[in-house]
Amino acid sequence: MSEHSTERRAIVQPDGATLTYTILVRGFTATVHLAGRPGRPTARIDLTLTVAHPGAGFPDDIAAVMSYEDIIEDLRRLCADETIPDPDYLAGRAADLCLGHAKVQRVHADVELPSLSAEGAVSGASITRVQQNSP
Image (cartoon, rainbow, N blue to C red; front, side, top):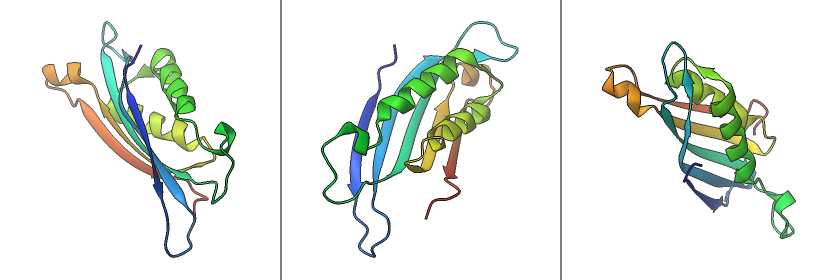
C-alpha cells in the first residue's frame, strides 16, 4: 500500500475566469513491471491537478468536488496492469488518466523510478498536459 499525501488549495480568479482549486498528490508509490527487466521496481508519482471549482455556495457534498481517491485508484490500476517501457510513458499515462476526469483542467506529473538511476538509465520524467476544452 502506498503512503502518500494530498492537499487541496482554492484559487480565486480576480478577473472572473473560471474558479479552480489545486489537488496535490505527493509520494504515491507502487511497484511496476518495466518492459524487458526482471522484478517489479517501485515507482514514485507526484501529481499537481488544477480542477474546476464548482463555484460559490456549492453544497458540502463530495459529489460537488473532485475526489483525489479516484485518481489514486486509477494510478493503482495503471501500475498493476500495464507494462511500463520507461518513465516518460508512465508520466504520460498518469497525466492522461487524470485528464479523463471532466473536472481536471490541467495536470503536471512527476515520475521517478529510482532503481533505473542505479543502472545509469533515465530514471525520471515530468509532463504537463492541459484539457483540450479547458478555458
